[in-house]
Image 1 (cartoon, rainbow, N blue to C red):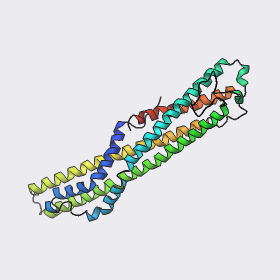
Image 2 (image 1 turned 180 degrees about the vertical axis):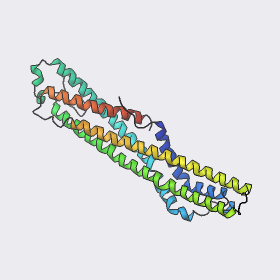
Image 3 (image 1 turned 120 degrees about the horizontal axis):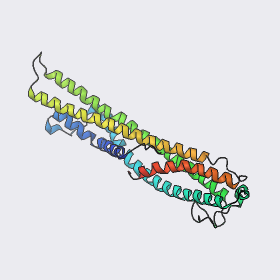
Image 4 (image 1 turned 180 degrees about the horizontal axis):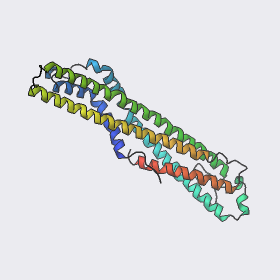
Length: 281
């Protein structure tokens, strides 16, 4: 049974982080205004010096997830076609094996013409009327490696987004906590209660810290889960490819059918994971 690594909330969490980065300069200014650190007429005129590097980073990284979505959508479309055609070949190879008698199972795979009956694979997996099964095995192996590398590349890109969550949100949270502590200390007089207006300012400011805390955890979980998914897909495809390593031009039909079926078991799990993610993108 397939264990799904992500759900729709992770996709939402990544878009939320993108929006957080986009709105960071405005959120900084609103925080300062609510805490009374700047007069209304000065809001938005200058970037906060203490967070200048952070806001510049947020601006650079705001497009990371939207760009990755495009890459993932194309990857899943291509992968879906490949898996569908590969599964069809595995099914037809299994049917071919069942048609053979015991002696026929020792037939060399070079004699299996996959472009003619009982196969029906013309224009699938690059198969033509003259194609032999070793060519198909080589192509499937090559395609598995191709998709493995693409998923691994997206896992690396996903780590960039995870580092964005780690590097941007905590800096703003630290800034807010420091300003809140300074503001409270500025207005505290011995053991006297803080003025109501100051308490209201502090409550509003702390609510913004609390919201950013949740966005941090939400974004970190989403980025980690999506990265784990991409890495898991790369591993599954690597394992699927490994099932075909022993197949060569000296192999027989029985060995070919067995190894293709083992490969298919791995690719089927990958297909199940990919289909779920494709629906979310």
